[in-house]
Length: 430
Ligand code: SAJ
Image (cartoon, rainbow, N blue to C red; front, side):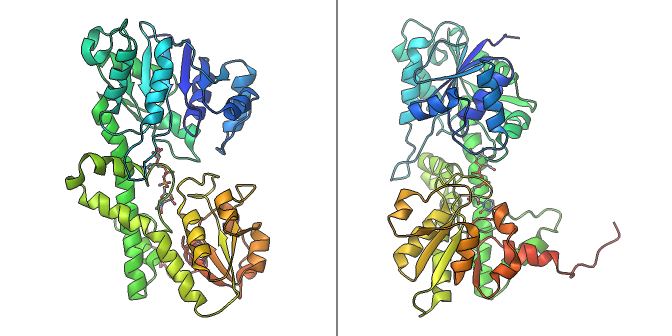
């Protein structure tokens, strides 16, 4: 097996930084590259700029022992792993600028025998486009798009599939698809990941691996949309959606996800559009799911407006701004959208509370929203809208909530907590 001495990871964000740490922890010399000088400086100080359990200790260790270094520009290495963002344009198309900019930045460093792996979530065909770009920039080297198994440089796609909040464990334990432009590319990429992956490495084509990644997130989006649609049905029929789901999930082949204020993050709320863009006529279900999930923040606001009615001067506290529990990531967060829509609805004083960030994002501050800690937010508010089921909110003393009007979009207080004290289950004998 190839002995990996050096790896360069392009992009030190939510995926790139933990990937740097894991490679470095396996004794490989890692150079993490980022265009943001603040990120480069903080990593070189052994600090992390994202919240992810256990990452800070690991980064501190591998920077201190010299295995990880950060830089603004790529340097020669045995392998280049591209983990840059692939955002969506206004018209819901994939913006691949960062991928191709990363490709252009590593092209001068490439030499015979090097491996380039794209990890960023990408539309089908992106790895081949990257390969062709590299071939164009380095006519002195052979690439697998035209040279096949005789190429000098090996190019593959291998998506991450880790869950924020469990990144370090899932990087190691999850199975991984590895799709090379050639078989040798797949094999070399598999060898690279075998330095830390304990799960299976499953070899396929670059295009299939690209679609597999998009499919995983589109599948989850469709299933969350089902839960959200069911929630609307239950509201219409005046039934408790949390109870209906819990009972339905006792069927051995039913596993419904949880409704909420919408779907956030940079993955599930975005990736299905990359499939829709490629096959618009074939994706009626995925498009509907996206629409259902995107409309959820407005339905939370409608519910708050109903509770407010004609009353004036009420204080409405929104608990949680992150896109999901126990993280600091506010990207594409439906909670933020709810808060913005509430501020624009002009129905009372809006208070926001997010224990994982130090200050309110500027665009919310500009809307006149007040930022308070959880105890003060609850104390001050007439109406409390629970938007994220952070651990801190689970610990709130129920007495502190008495007399307040609650809108619990996550079923934390009105179902999960209430359920613990409930004795409606006649336990079976198994
Ligand atoms: N959500 C619900 N109801 C649920 C589950 C989630 O409303 O029952 C919401 C969350 O609150 C959040 C959003 O969906 O706003 C997404 O959260 P998530 O935990 O489902 O997923 P992400 O975005 O943190 O990570 C996903 C994962 N993909 C899948 O589970 C198929 C992860 O494995 C991927 O690596 C990641 O996307 C990614 O980077 O693509």
